[in-house]
Amino acid sequence: MSDRRLQVFHTVAGVLNFTRAAEMLHMTQPAVTHQIRQLEQDFNTRLFDRVNNKISLTPAGEQVLGYASRILSLYDDMHESVKQLTGDRSGLLTLGASTTIAEYMLPELLGGFRREFPDVHVRLRVANTDAIVALVADSSIDLGIVEGEVHKQHLVVEDCQQDELVVIVPNDHPLAGQSSVKPKDLTQFPFVQREDGSGTKSVIAGYLLQHHIQEDQLQHPFELGSTEAIKGAVQAGMGISIVSVATIKKEIALGVLTAIPLSPPLMRPFYFVRQRQQFRFRLMEELFEYARSYCESN
Image (cartoon, rainbow, N blue to C red; front, side, top):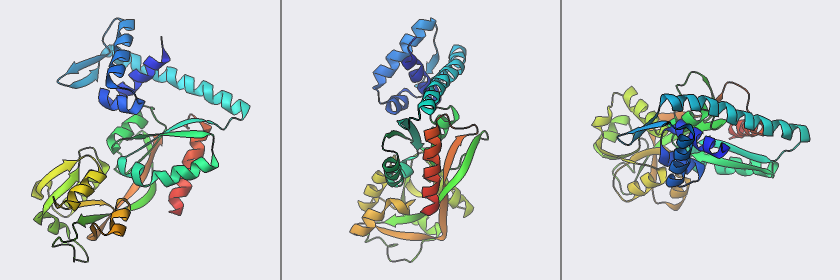
């Protein structure tokens, strides 16, 4: 049986979404579906139930997932033991990050790590906070960096660094001349926000609730799947939004958007998320320590 099929199955089982799994594996969705069908033919049983465009593991799928996790872990252990024996400091590491962190924090961090470890290739999986936490939980990746709260008790969650979120508006907007924006001011204008599962959306919702504002009090809220799309929508006059201050440095420098602090300020931590046991690779430990030092110095 091909270990590649097990890898594909393990990824699909982790996110329960063929499209997302295909993106993570850098494969087409038909190719992922083909691998799963071949595996189901090998076992002569279905591994997934497919109902109303949602998938779930069958009892046989649950059984295979347990074995697949152990088999793939043994492959990793084998490769790592040989590397430690030979002193090899090369290889492939997979890091997971939520969208804001991946786009605006990690390029500098990973660039510095690559200069120190030129023979290590880091593959970055980008998804919203919920998806990255799920990948860490099922051991598809060893380390995640996310911007939303993590509620899985069996994972280790550590603060990385603090991030401020600010209101963004077009330059000619009525709020543009204010020194700060109060939470109630946000209900007076159309609001653009991220999708469900986004750590940013979760943090904003929590902040508004602390100030007795329900989501249905926002004017005509609509969702977009990325910070870049939100910035474009705000610049086009479609509404106002709240984003990380780290994501708008270019727009502020170019003078195409106005950023206004919230009052009281809205701060959130970025988190490291990992399993309680040791990393499977020594190099992943090196990457984690490098990322931790980077966060402490920025």
